[in-house]
Image 1: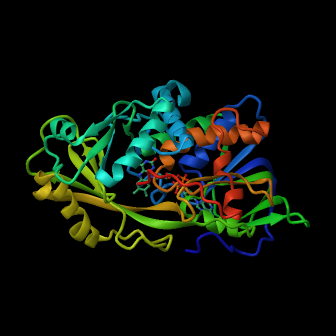
Image 2: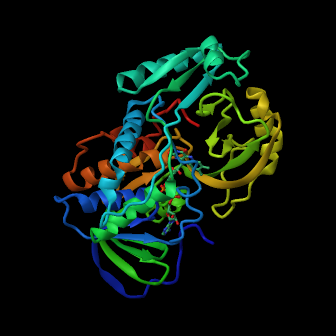
Image 3: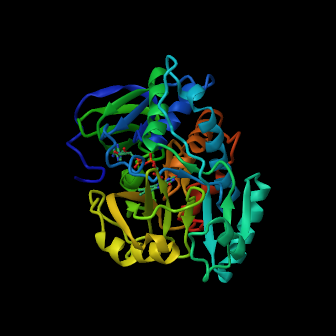
Length: 409
Ligand SMILES: Cc1cc2nc3c(=O)[nH]c(=O)nc-3n(C[C@H](O)[C@H](O)[C@H](O)COP(=O)(O)OP(=O)(O)OC[C@H]3O[C@@H](n4cnc5c(N)ncnc54)[C@H](O)[C@@H]3O)c2cc1C
């Protein structure tokens, strides 16, 4: 399959115009559709174009679906803290006729581990997190050993633990919640693939979205929510976007001897390996040995990663994990921003009615509610009114000025 275009020659019908056309209807596209359609100051029509309504290969449904407040940049912390708020009133926010999907949020916390070398970064991040209101605590090696007796701590200096509002939820239900309410509010979803973007003669305005079905849709603006395929949508108007699909595996396993003590928080080891409970199992992942761009249709699980990297790392950190058995596994794609691994959100300076909502790497699910709300403000009022996402703007890509987040998984 070609990532975005070109499609057939676009001599087909022109559909009636829309205010906003959103490319991609998974968690980001549907969050934006939700917020725009909930906003009584926004009275334009909204069309979501989604090429795969099963969403079976979307990052959203292949996600590990966890939320943390432990980032290094305030904007990322605030986005996740808003996710916590949104989740708390999810039923009220998205219900239609009194019904809403069950998010199943589990407040398990995140635990970042560090060697002596890594403690300074952990302390600096801790200060930023506390100043944003996150409930986090630094733990010494002794405190780690006392609290998590199953951990091997000899090579650690300490850790940072989220005390509340960090955990996991059902990603599909979050997406479905946005979708059901957006549809209820009048947003239209169409199954099709965006294959072209037509601009005016000056080339500074998108006028039509071209679809694989041969139709063209007139619109006032376009928002790129195409996940790992986002670059191919930007290519359609020759705008640079350093976002590429990167494979990430997830392995679910059972342990012969279940761990004693409190639930295993989402524990991030010094080498990037991470593991958490996934009742009644455990779930683990790690950055691949060869972390390179992959074909957007390549979802092959790299089993060597499990044998060579993940299992040894798990058994080192938690000796009980010497005796485990994989029950199932899958691979999904990060939409990985090679400049700085942070999101790219907002309009293109060269084509101001083309908006980016891309490059969320491994933290887009938790950012979806806050980013959708903020982008709705920018589109409706011309300014951010809640969380200011200016630092995530596309201008930094053009100027090659990274906006680095240090707590990346
Ligand atoms: C293994 C893994 C673990 C993760 N863990 C976490 C986590 O713990 N916490 C967290 O917050 N995030 C996590 N993430 C990241 C998170 O899942 C993503 O950032 C988020 O789901 C991105 O949503 P999206 O809507 O931007 O992209 P996607 O979910 O990929 O959706 C993009 C949609 O666009 C559609 N599309 C693409 N091109 C076109 C086109 N030309 N025309 C029409 N439709 C098109 C696709 O079909 C797709 O449905 C993880 C991701 C992976 C892969």
